[in-house]
Image (cartoon, rainbow, N blue to C red; front, side):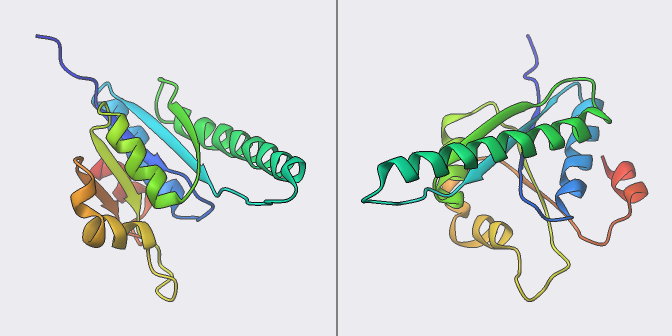
Length: 156
């Protein structure tokens, strides 16, 4: 029987903690002969009367997403020899994640990094451990914010 390749999903953002999630996912996937999946989402921009402006804004958002995802891909490749799978989605962040996980059954673990910023909280962690927990069928790994790189390495 062929074993399923483990795939660790990291949803990208601009937080400094994202590198904790990427480090864990990349090392864990390397140790299990798995792979990392990177998902970048961007909001839909509505310019109802100016379709051309909306198209330009969307194209710019997509180009920015592709640039960012390349940066994160390079970071993952410092720990893993397999190129990550890369995905870009447009729309509400939570809805995109739920839709992505529903459509892509190959994801075996959803890796999130907690923030040290208590004033803003962790909207994805709150959503997927409380309100939206019944919408996904994949385990979630939460990387605490104060772990050192060495501690993350030991856990992965």
